[in-house]
Image 1 (cartoon, rainbow, N blue to C red):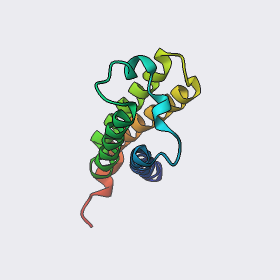
Image 2 (image 1 turned 30 degrees about the horizontal axis):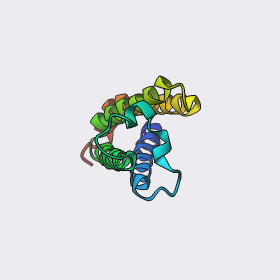
Image 3 (image 1 turned 90 degrees about the horizontal axis):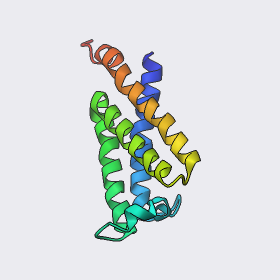
Length: 125
């Protein structure tokens, strides 16, 4: 179980940090395309600025998973669920919504596993 936990933790440290950092560089994709038009229309700033804020939040979430996976897992799970709901509201990018929901379940599972595995990992030698 420790190996599964460590793999999930590594995933939810790296992926949010990389995706968050890319919100500033747009190397992986043009992130603004994923902002629901109805949400973009009510923002007091551009979609690019919104995605930069999203990127900062994702980087913070990855760092929280690194330091406190029992909390960070729930944060990432919630965040991914909100993103999936954003996709489903407009029925755009349904494939990405499904992927994000699966990742949310994985992040939630990591948080649950951290309560079982993490205390074992932190026992004094």
